[in-house]
Image 1 (cartoon, rainbow, N blue to C red):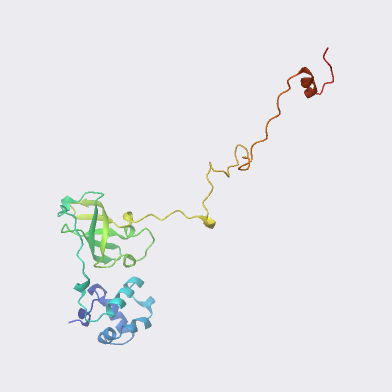
Image 2 (spheres, one colour):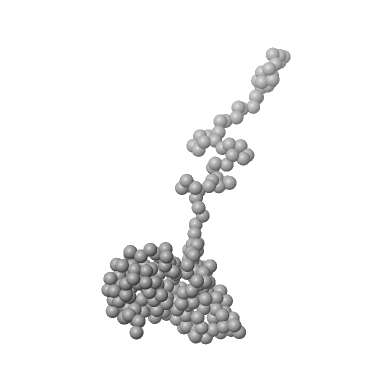
Length: 219
């Protein structure tokens, strides 16, 4: 029996704890009783990401706890029981059953796990799927496709996330082409100041001649 079986550490990450025990030349039993030893290990030399290491440390701080205590069953959609029930665009709740280098497998209640490729895990760039999800985590997924012949289900998590907003320089948005800062077509007068009134056209012959610079007089 593996000493880690009495902890909440998932079997998929046993190898990481074994690497740690080997690196510090300490039995696994001692690491379980003294999880602070994990902090002394050079994490860059371990075959695991920061998310996985933090998860292991958290679980080792609860020795002897039955991992089933924290398990919460997902709410599978009613009427979706077989792969043939899946339709593109469906939003379902499922549980992550396995995390690999290329993505995560999610059980959505159809007796066949679907794959969320690493490119569909998050709107932000990630190098390791463990940075976004972990085994046993309940997630919302969108069905991208379901092939009954190949028994393959493609899912997405990032398509249900809010997209990242456009970057704005210096904390202000770029001026609109139709906004008040427009310069094409002539400058606008300052707000609150009326345009100067045009001079009234001359009415009498003398006024017309004066406007033309003439000095004649009418009879």
